[in-house]
Every structure is written in C-alpha cells, then in structure tokens.
Image (cartoon, rainbow, N blue to C red):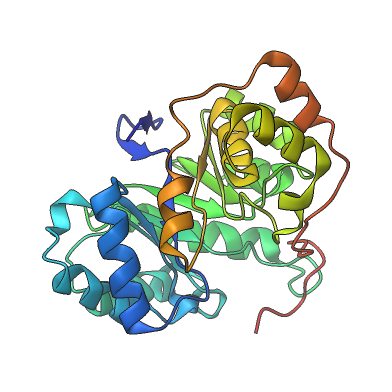
Length: 281
C-alpha cells in the first residue's frame, strides 16, 4: 500500500474501504477480513452509516490489531458545535471499541439555506474538532463536502486547518478548482465516491483505456485519481471487485489518457450540493 503524507506529518493510505450502506454484520466481517488480507488498512465509516458496531465486531472476528488500521469516522449534522462534537466522538469511540480515531471529519458543512449563521456554526463545530486533536483523542481532523468558500471562512477562526477534505470526485466530476486550491493550502483531497454512482463505468473513454491497459474501468478511474494525488475510498459489497480496486499500482496512465479522462463531461454525480441541500435525513 502507498501512503500520502498529510500536512501535520502523519500519513494516510491512498486507498481505503468505503462502508456507506454496508450494515450487514456478516458481510462486513467478510469484506474487512478480505480487505485486510489484500492490503487495505484504511476503513472509512461515519456515525450516520449505522455500522460502527458492526465494524468493531468485524475487526475483532478477523483478529486484526487495532494499531494496524487507519480508522476514519465522521460526526453527523445533529452534533454540531463544540460540546456536541466532543460527545459524538466519545459515542463513536465506544461503538468502535477504541480509545482513539486516526481521522475524524465533519460530515457536512452547515447549509446556507438552512442556517443564516452557517459560518459561526461551522467555526464552533471546528473548535470542538480542534480540541479532540489537541487532547490526542483524534490523530487527524478534517472535513467533508466543504467547498472553497467554506474553507476560506474556516481559515478566519481556525487554529488548525483541516488536513483533508473528503468530497465527491470522479471522472465526470473532476473538482479541478478545489484540487488546485487544496494543494496550495496543503489540504489533502479524498474522493468519497471515486466511482460516482456507477454510471461512469460505462463511459466510452474509460472503457477504451481499460481495454488498452487490460484492466477494469474502475481501476482506470481509481488510477486517474491516484495520479491526481487523490485518496480514494471505493465501496463495494463484492470481494472480487474489492480486490481489484486496490490493484492500481502496476500500471500508469499517460498524460494524454489523463487529459482524456479530465475532459469527460459531467456524469455520474450523486447530486448533493452542500449549499443547496436543506435536509440531511
């Protein structure tokens, strides 16, 4: 596994196991066991996924040492603000049966449509995140779904800037402007949906390149993201796809192939805009 160094000197695997919608305990145990054997070390979860307990059981059932894993979790929108964040983190720690998290993320910024004081809410929530980091409970802190203007506002009050921004990113939604901004600010980008909603796997450009490389369209997409210095957490319930998703380090895309993928028009989007969505469940 290859690792990316974060702005605070810590490192994170370039590829991890996404667990959104994976709640079946037996399936999770099989997936996590197979993932670990294949070389995965990053497991991405969230309070909203309702699978923290199942993940803890899967780690135990497979005899995996906690210290060998990079566990990333997210605080949900009902736990905004300094005290609420700290309480939510403790709840997640208990469910995961661990005394620390490798990464803790704010799942969504406060929506402009829902909160006129979204700047203050985000700042107060981030202060809670900073306190968890300073206390050593969380080794890295970051955000999800933050646009450039969210990050710019956070800079005005933050003592520590996020080391990572997890966002929707995939061929057909390349987020080049955000990538360039975060590169300047030394914020790593993590793709929460590196394969989009699955539609991109039928894309003619990806299929043509995959045939030439004798790899899958998913592997082409993940390699494109890796060459853009993006961390990915592909989600699958299929062990064979899980195994192939990590096998992207023995081939390379040319500059022309990278440009071809960059130029794919918008497709495969999940369709959630942090500034427009006013209800998160």
